[in-house]
Length: 345
Image (cartoon, rainbow, N blue to C red):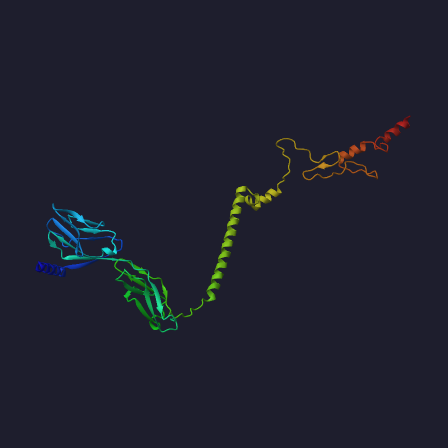
């Protein structure tokens, strides 16, 4: 019995040494699928998946129903595929399979690993400055459960270059570099650090901008404002003239020649077409006369002055005045006739 057991262990060891192991890294809480390699040429009648040395799932046609000892696994008895979900650290290890009493040569080493953390760049010595000749940078972060981790560095705006966790910089080689960046990466994730200002950066005084540019810019701006103001003023004037034309303003619509003709034309002529015009210079009770303009006080008609003189208004009025007896003088016109009558008596 002991000899048989030893022989079985030797056979199992030889099979394992001849098998090929494939790594399957996954995140904790993730899922993984394991296939048969190579795929069986005959229909599956017996299949058995193992985790390390214990049976994980098995099925024998018409003999053993499909059984497994985990709730997070599924076995396809047609293709032989094993699917697992919500993987934990306890589920990490080697998985092997036997189909139709034949052990598959390919095994799977399932790795359940954590995501890498966001790295932070540190430096030493702490007195590292632009006066130092060299410094050492480190890409730090807790990588427990995330191994294996690789590191990469970017110098300034250059390309990523895989390197070690620590990076030595010198003033001669990196004095003109403004910043550095590092990256952590494993088989399931990667993270990049914030920009790190180079402590050895040689800050040269940049030339101050010349005031000539500001002066020219100010002149151009003022000239632009003047041009805009002129254009706006002309535009407003054109709009105002257009509105005057639409409203019939005679000063613009008729022009200088028509305006002169309008001024020479009598404006207050009585309308002779529609009937007799109102009499001009009509005397009022107070001897004023209405004219074609402001009311002016007319001279009294035939009014005797203090010195018994009469203002003559014309031939007709003069004749009438002569035929009218004066208030305090005898009628001169009829005096000779009366004397002639007295003589005849």
